[in-house]
Length: 326
Length: 247
Image 1 (cartoon, each protein chain N blue to C red):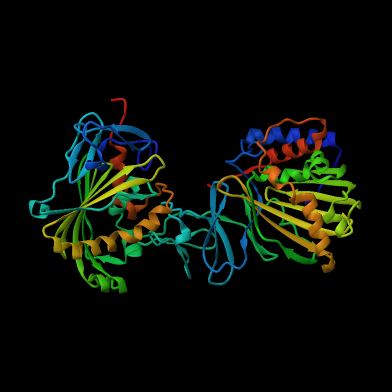
Image 2: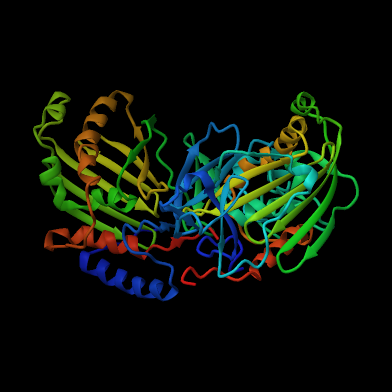
């Protein structure tokens, strides 16, 4: 994927054009819309699954299972016959077997068995492009992937515990692009260094000075300069590349749950293992300490001049195509 | 399909709305059929077998089924159950002959015979052999052959007449709930109490595994040739009048 460097006004113009085009296709949804899920790569499950598991993605459900050859597949969760829940089925040599009528579905989604029928019906189960990487199973929720799954650098990996945030994924991710909140919420005065936008990614580089808060002072980061780039890829992944005061990458993933809230997973990648304490302190001070605030937001479009980047971000999100599971 | 398994539509038919005893003389009790609320009071409901029955519609187009006199000696009513599945699908499941092999692990001896009495009844006559499982050994059903007739009546009733291994009858009433699921009432009609020893295991063997499947179902009418009987019931429901609560 190629990112394009644009000024704020250029970015705005580009997005307005894209917005008009996609709106005509009718596959976009408003920001923080509870009923819609944006297309993109989503973290579906840890790769230690041993059996069939259904996962809620917004109001939809997908199924993840490992076949007898050990390959992982993500498919629609309801049988393409009468709609039975395939999570109650079995993995067989014939594919995924529905517990209701015994219909089987191959890895490509084709029906491989339909007991009681002379010929195999021309039905397909929707399957999703799936990747197993960094200990997780990822799926592109949409048609064919519009970009490859972003690859983190080969650094030391720290996987934090998954978290539930009672806020819509759009609102949760927007936090990194909301320049005006860094001062009041985190005590960091920042400015935008660059903003890059294309159809599937938005990248925002910020510069600022960290506050003299005890957790940061304790690890020697109080008052240090901060240089970080927030990049969102599709609907489900944000990479935060912190260049200064220590270099590391934070991978934030979000999947909407059935209530429209965020199921998040945070993974850190550090060039030097010994930086983990400072990385966690910085993560806490810049991203996690305002979760209670996020959980109480009732989203409105009250943009002011200081919200220029956030406004661009909202346009970017609204311009992304929705995923439909049918 | 507009009516079958549509949670916003209630078709005309008989609905069991709870225990008749719960409706006290001179009092009004509230109940729901689908997403419509109704007021129940003595005189406005039909009381039979301990249940209060309401005809959703202007005047009944058919009567409640009457079991054979010999089976009416004893009636057992099970507590109301809630199933997170539309009642049309729950009742249609009895006519879905292709699911029995996988879900219930028994096989048919001969082709199930279908009989229709339009516009309200559709029956299937079944002769089936129970495969042996540990539970069926314990329940005394392993390796036995059973014969029964499963009749769906309108949008809300299923009547099962078992001829062997022990004669008894069973009436299921399913009422749609506002959340899209259903409340079911089960009535056993027995010639003698000892028939329960076979009747209950048979009911367990033929319905127990269904609940798990039905509660995970997001029904879509993707019928194929092997679903012919089930599809026919869906068409029967499609042809029933919709209850307009203003009548």
